[in-house]
Amino acid sequence: MLISRNPREAETSRYDAIIIGGGIYGITLALEAGRRGLKILLLEKGDFGEQTSFNSLKIIHGGLRYLQSLDLHRFQESVGERAWFLRHFPDRVYPLPCFMPLYGKGTRTPPVFRIALLANHVLSLKRNKGIRPDRHLPAGQVVGVQKSKEIFPLIDLEGLKGGAIWYDAYMPDSQLLVLDLLLTACNLGATPLNYVQATEILTDSKSHVRGVTALDRENGENHEYYSDLVINAAGPWCRTIVKGIKGTREDLFRPSLAWNVLFKRDALSDHALAVQAKETGSRLFFVTPWKGRIFAGTGHEPWPGEPGRPFPTRGQLSNFIQDLNKAIPGLSLQIDDVDRIFAGLLPTTEVGSNKLTKREVIIDHGTEGGPKGLYSVGGIKFTTARLVAEKILDLAGSGTSGQIDERLKTSSYPEIQYNIQALDQYQQLLARDSSIVHLDDFLLRRTSLWENRDKAMVLAEKLCTLFPWDENRKKQEIGKCATCLKALPDEI
Ligand SMILES: Cc1cc2nc3c(=O)[nH]c(=O)nc-3n(C[C@H](O)[C@H](O)[C@H](O)COP(=O)(O)OP(=O)(O)OC[C@H]3O[C@@H](n4cnc5c(N)ncnc54)[C@H](O)[C@@H]3O)c2cc1C
Image (cartoon, rainbow, N blue to C red; front, side, top):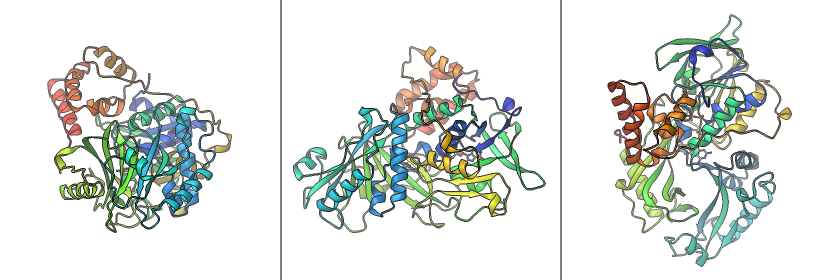
């Protein structure tokens, strides 16, 4: 069995920790706790990794930008985590060459970048230690105008002084990396349950956490799960979980909207491009060559109200595209070129702002006057989720990170290809992973089949026959897939 979903059976055990939220933060918590020998229950109200963690720009940041603000601590953390992913999941994480045109304005000059790239190299000298040679990240360099043009043929030549090249890491199938991490956690003993929503934190008369009540959203059954340690890693929903519970601080996840756009247009370069229009105050775009197409980010806007289903408005999306066209003259993208919007919520420094928080927030509710044994986390990056997991477990006194064997035995989720004639490969997967509850779990998060919308919809019809569903349920499932696969959601 790859992943086994059995909410009733899970009630019969007692856990060392219950983790709420099956995004990258919850999953890396389950993995790190498993490495410390803890017995873990992981609850996810939807499917694993389906929210913010599905919608990132898919970059494992090494932190060059943190050098600019001299935030060396954050720089070192990011470099270390990037190396961790490249070392342990080299089949999912790849080097990503990045390029920025230099027009000689402000710090964007060849001499300044030569120094910055040298510092980046020297401060990350150990970045390739223990990593497979074909995943090594070379040192960056500054190149001249001619080379810049070769890398980025649409580059605006007016005033161009050269370009900066550096290397980061990329996870093109980030949803499968999430599954690999989950599977690795399962093999370390974790019990993950998707479509099970934590509804209440249980405490005893001494205000110590006892566990949680939870709702199986598939059949409406309620369950109680017991543990002295509960970690709330529910991302944008983490405030909802601890609403009304003492010890919840104001700075825990104040949401703002962020989004990236995949376009139906060929990639502009084999490098990721950091580009900005020449006007002062214009936004910086990162345009990656995701699977040969233009994938650009990141739009940021305030997000009023509750988490819900985050998406930019049509106006926000149009401005984003207009600004991107200004940053790359000659690009001429239109709204009709949009293939998919990847949107989510990120924490900000104040309500109603789009200024992102620079550090994760970890709350030990017990020390803030709330229940002992309850922790909440508001994370800021996919890249550093695993390190944050270690910090939380250290804070909770759950095993010591120093005793952990660095040689992690990782697992990988099977690769499933499109083959309409060979339904048996899909049937075998369904038999091995009972957490595939809905068609979109399969198409969007256990495979990369969603990338070709037309083929995915044809397959969706066929796959229905493999589930014990009546006609009504089949219709609902296909309708849900069609909605998930739309280029622009109806709300826009
Ligand atoms: C547009 C965008 C681009 C980004 N790009 C990058 C990037 O390139 N690199 C990078 O490092 N980071 C990036 N990030 C940041 C990164 O994606 C997030 O920091 C990370 O995914 C957050 O993970 P999470 O687990 O906290 O949240 P989520 O992935 O949202 O997971 C939280 C989970 O909790 C579940 N949940 C909520 N309530 C309950 C409940 N009551 N019971 C059970 N489960 C519950 C939700 O269903 C959800 O699945 C980006 C983010 C955005 C939005």
